[in-house]
Length: 321
Length: 233
Image (spheres, rainbow over the protein chains, first blue to last red):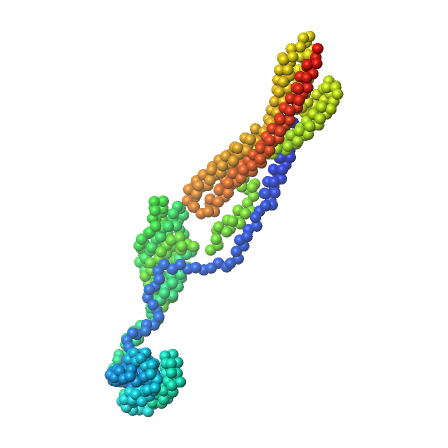
């Protein structure tokens, strides 16, 4: 070995030692850019969603007809009476332009809507007389003087209708107002001595049929689920092994109102069995049942006992996370 | 739930070559040690060769210019022929052959020319061979080290997979250290091979230049001796 080679060997060795020394002491370590300080987020995974709504049920039955005498065309006890009268009204409008304002005040009734489109064209007729005439019958039918409350209601519809549909704005408001004078009065409902009749006749039962509290809704269901999971979690230790995380054992268990197990937990099914985890299935099921037994007196809200009387609990990897 | 990959990343970022080496399998360790030795040897050759080839080519240039300026070749031979320079060796071989051939009573000019050419040619060839002796090590390291490193990596990854099978746990945390140490073997292989390849190309170019210079010098000297031969008796 020549002298230069000795020098070279010495230098190379020293260089390598130096380099690896530096690397070992973290000279070239990359700073870890991921300094995540985001607080952990709680995510609860709910298997089964309660499909039953807990919201108070709104009765679909039409409100019982009020027997109170009412003025105006608005639908009501009179509708049957009014209906015939209005159809009669509808035909006349086409020829006489103004009927519009009047029908508008009573949007709920369908005939009115039909009438609307047609009227806009002719202004002149001002047809105040006609609607007036039309309405009067109603008035006549219920000759009671107008209640104050009734006034605002009709006023709005007319206001809306006038700007939107009708070109002759100035004229119509006027017509409307004029109409008001006549129509407002009819609108109010008058409580007669017999206004409770209809209510009494109709049985109130259907409305109150759905009491809100007793039903376990989606919220309570998921809250119960997560509470049960929370109580099971410390006792559930899934077996380890290949593909074991795919196993999912469902155990059915009956609970007494005190939260204790009644009878014995029963394995309903285990899914996710593959060739590699077949040997672990038995153990998985045993551990699942054991977890329930260990967690046994469940502390769950007694008022929702219906919701946890009979449970089907799924044991899988998620439960242990 | 903290994310395991993140904690793993922080560990991996601070992992040192020494730690990687210490936790490696025995085969991978052997590969790493061998590659490290190859790297050290490569660099030793690079350094010593870089010195020697630079010094040699400079010395040859100086020697040749001195040689052509000298009046008396015999005296120049006496004083400078002991040098280690390739040019000096070539000149020494030529002068020795010349003296031997012209010592006889009758001179066979053609035979003398042949012998002179052969003697100087073989001297320059021997010098080049001696110089380029170490280059084949660079070539070997440059071409083989990556494969050796790859072998270490493959072995290490195989072992990592067997450890997965043994623990029946396929999480990244189980596999990652094994794969990291396995990849470290390839890294060392490349670390040794890349300088070796670069140095090999660079130095073979330098050797080629030196050989061309020696050949030119021996040709010129041969021409001089051949001319001198005409004037002999």
